[in-house]
Image (cartoon, rainbow, N blue to C red):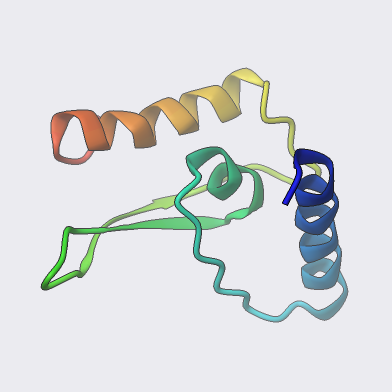
Length: 89
């Protein structure tokens, strides 16, 4: 989907969560999207025996600004995990 529709859908997902309080499991390969939507971000190991390697708690309120220092640090921390092959410090 195009970028504008994607952002509309992301915001709609947040609105649904805020109204219902239900747990939502959202799977994405986009780190920025995970940082924008998630309260906990779990990273899986490589297959064939995939398991959760690390879970990062996101302590940011909604609405989120992906261009804030806090969000940038979160995205960089997760990117570092993939570059060094283990949890970022």
